[in-house]
Length: 359
Image (tube, rainbow, N blue to C red; front, side, top):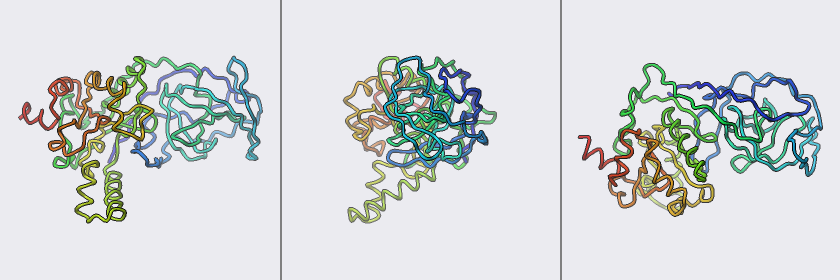
C-alpha cells in the first residue's frame, strides 16, 4: 500500500485580482499529496477525490474581467446557462500554490489533475465566477484563478521530510536493480510527491527530478514528463491489455504476445516505474515519437546533467541483451547522487555496473 505524504506548500501570495471575488475563501488550494499517483502515456488519469472538504459557496455572479494591469483581451463572452459567463482569453499564468484541476468550474466537479507551485497553465478563458479555463493534457479543464499569477513565483527550497522508519534509510539504499528477474519485495512501500502535472515519484527522487527540470529550464531546455510512478496493479492491467491486443490484433499466441510485450513493458512488480524511481522524459515536440528524442537538445542536456541529480540513462543502446529492453533514450532511473556519475561515466548498464563493482 502506498503511504500518504504531506509536504508544506510554499507560502506564496497570488498576484492576481479577480473582480467580484474579493475576500472569497476557497478550499481549492490543496495540501500536497492529496491526489493519487500519476499515469502512463495514452491513459486517462482516474483521480480520486482525497482533498479536504470543499464547501465554499459559489462566488457571486459578475461579468467583470480579471484585472491584469494591461489592455483587455476579451474576444467573446459566452453565456453558459449555468449561472456564469465565459470570456475567451489566451495567456500564460503560473500556480502560486498546490491547486486542484477540475473538469468544470465548480468545487463539486471531478478532479483531473493538480498544479504544483510554479507550474505553468495555458489559459484559454475565464469565468465570471472566478475560474480560469485552461488547456490540460489536450482537453479543457478549470482551476480557481485566485491561485494563479502572471509572474512565475520565486519558490523557496524545500527539504524532503523523511518519515520515521521509512523504507529508504540512506542514500545508498536507492542503488538496486528492478527488472524482469528482480521484483520489488512484498514489503516495498514508498511515499510520493508530484514532479510535473499529475506525475509522481518517490519523495527523494521527486525532489531531485524537480531540481533537474528547473535547472534545465534555466538553460533554455523545456522537459516534459511522460510517465513516472505506476502502481503494481496498474502495471498488471497495462501489461495484460497489451498482451491481449497482440493476440487479438496480430494473431499471436499467448507466449509470443507475452514475449513481444515484455521487450517494452515490464511485468507487474518488475518495473522501475512501480518502484517510483523511474521517469520518462522527452521534449514537448516529440511526445509521440520517442526515438526521435535522441536527436534533440533536450536529450543532449539530460545525458550531460542527469547524474548531477542522481539519475542515469537506464536502457542503453547495445545493452538490450543484458537489460532485456530496447534502447530508451527517454527513460531515467534515480539511483542517488553517490553512484549516478560513476555509472554514467562507465558506459555500463546498471546490471553490468552492479555485477562488476558491488559483488
